[in-house]
Length: 123
Image 1 (cartoon, one colour):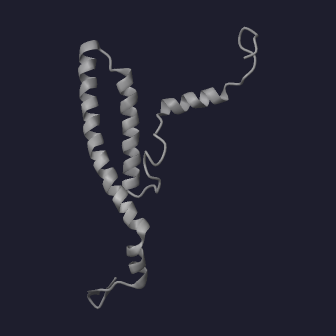
Image 2 (image 1 turned 60 degrees about the horizontal axis):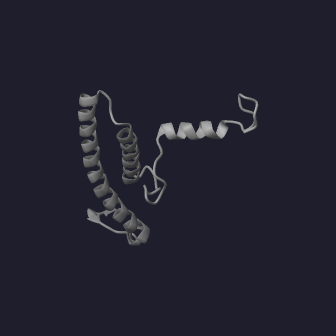
Image 3 (image 1 turned 180 degrees about the vertical axis):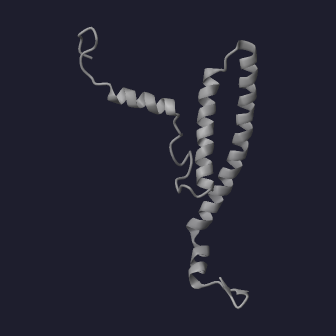
């Protein structure tokens, strides 16, 4: 806070600066920023491999598609944490992010009623 042209630190600010949670968060932010840096390099490598595979066999690799989707969602988790849009720490402190396809498949599996199948047999 400025007072008569001088920067004055009030008691509340001192307490906020001494908060262990605040310094722990900045430590996590630095670690996740470095992880995200290497993650982006990995994403570019996957993109290059996918481009080559698409050029050679005329389709991308399904496993790399799934892996790339997970990495992009993990990167999104990191960016949300770094920009203070969430307090939830990314993986491994929270679950690995699932793709929209996995979420849809899980919903379909849950909503499918148990009972008789098409052949009339009980499942």
